[in-house]
Length: 331
Image (cartoon, rainbow, N blue to C red; front, side, top):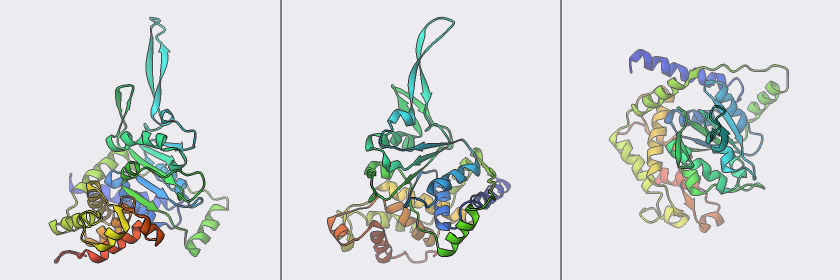
């Protein structure tokens, strides 16, 4: 990849962010984490109470990219075939022979919004497992590849709300990042009121192509990370496991911890964050920032933790406090 190509690709990122911010007010950290998910080649789970523009964010992102977009509204009666597609019986008018033809479902798109994913039972949620991991769909013994790039963003309401089903651990682990959306600040909320209750409509223009996304994903993997920081990532992930860790906090409050996929996710997203900030080397700051959205859905706390209101985020906080950085590491 030439220096001119790299410069061109890096210039696309602030343009993409600027287009999204025409519609989305504030939520700077959330927007960065969504873009990091895209750059790292993973999928994102966005959680927040109704009305925090989760769906609008994904729709606006799709408008700012020259890619196919499909939205799937998850409901209690949604079936796997409503997502993946199904075979229909057709007839060849020339020969009169009948045959089965596979009609692709909405999963066959570059950007897929799985809206309110936890309002459908686990049977239907599981239809996404192969698509998210292998980027392909198997139906009636045949395998169909998904388009490239493939990027799934799911939204969910907090599980305490009525009509929700908890996502199984295997499903959660398929998400690269678990992004929590908070209420806007007072000034941001005032801007939202001013911008959304008048006649002015923001026009979002597509700024990046599918080929450029694939090139950026390759560029992310070329970002360097020192051996010391790689070892630091490994120490953090291994310390989440109560059976092998030396940390009493984890042994007391965790049922089980993160697997090797978490280490891969933390390394890749730290690289993507560095690139998003126009850097070609990972620093400790990148790892600190990505530890929470990478690990919070891969750590399962026990009943003691629930009784004492110890959350996975609190566990991650303790890990970052107790596991010291190696010497001579960039912060």
